[in-house]
Image (tube, rainbow, N blue to C red; front, side):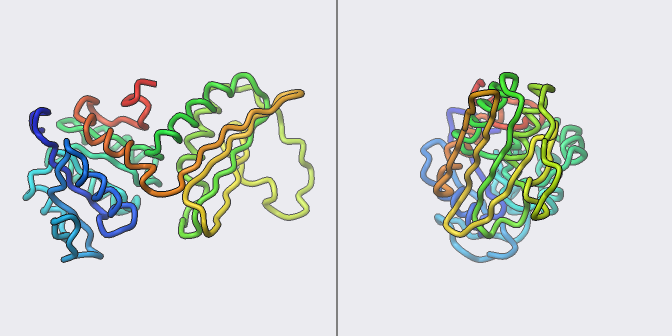
Length: 260
């Protein structure tokens, strides 16, 4: 890792995609970061902020990256992340779909460098999940509605899954679903941890949004977070690039970096 008085050398995997390209821009304009490498086998030869996109991970080592940001897909990340660990590079990961087994493997591999994995890099989303976790013990019913653009292929979102897991861990006192008949199959959504129902909306015009609705007798609490463009995730990505070196091993979520 370069001395922190120097600019941090950052590489981006998946640089040709919409999210990867946005990450490249965020890194390029930050005074503490240097975009020194970009990798994407589907965009080889393209120029992004003065960096030529390469097709092989070797370009990251050739550029002496301190930190590499990965916004790809789980199958690709399972190849990229162990390679980064082997080469002593820190990783900032926004790829969803990694399993508990994947995380366990990464914990055993990231011993000489560090890795931050977050389901959502929007700081407002991190706070939304934390607020839902804090509220959970005071309510006995809850449902999650997540809404995304129509190009998102997985459902529910990683953010919704993590939110439900954290709420379930915060309270075991949830009322049973009274529904005995679904007129339209699936109308009650999917059933997550502790029986918390999760509903996924896929719609043009949206980016990433989530509502957590909690209810008790005579009252409800709605916590909503909205990301209107991909730059909403960039402050969290930049934060992680700057501080991943301070958090040994694998860190899940931005909460430890934010001190919450």
